[in-house]
Image 1 (tube, rainbow, N blue to C red):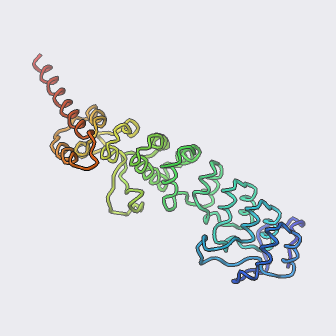
Image 2 (image 1 turned 180 degrees about the vertical axis):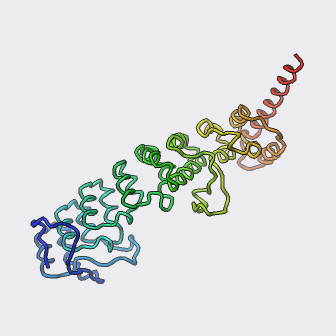
Image 3 (image 1 turned 90 degrees about the horizontal axis):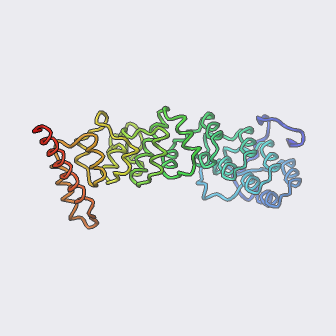
Length: 327
């Protein structure tokens, strides 16, 4: 049964014969017709009852050659795409979601066409949606069931792609949703680790919780039930000597363990910022840690400067307190 696209057929596909084969050779001639843009010859092929696609379900995308549908989308043949879809072409049997191709080409009319004719939005690569820079598309696919946080996609994306302000805006809009909140915290930890100041500022603006302890995005599972090592963005900033980032992260003695933070200080900027919030009760562990670091091969003088600054602050505060009490 051949469906003429000029008859303005409407989705969904019903009563179309299954035109799938397991042999690439059976559609070799069809592939050549699609590549040559010979749409009338493709119509005759379909009308003759020949197969129009190969099932690639169990193969990796990189192992599969092009398909009639991917050729149609990548070569910008909208009418050919419509012809295939309305004649029963099954998008779910493609080696990768054809929506990925349309989104990455920024071919919005193809996205609408594919969704209308049954392409599964949840099979789409989250990065393909985020990379459109289109807030409306992020909302649309999220509403259609695509988890943009899947496999750490949103977290990795936001920790690196600071030019995509709509993606941060989308995350801010949904920051109270548990999956998004977790992704934001993971992204913030990664951005702090890499000392990406702009990403840190944007993530905090989007609602990332700097006090929330989460696994490392790069080394651990992001599963909330994971009992592995967890750190907050504030703890990471102190641990790695990124004191300049604390102005965005806002350490708080009521929310953060300052005794633990003081044990990890290793740069003078962190010393100054923590002192303004809560002076240390005991610097012995911090001293041991920084002294031990001085023997490291890649040691720099930030450790000695941190110790000097801490001692200077402690001494200065003690003298000030004594002078005030005596006066």
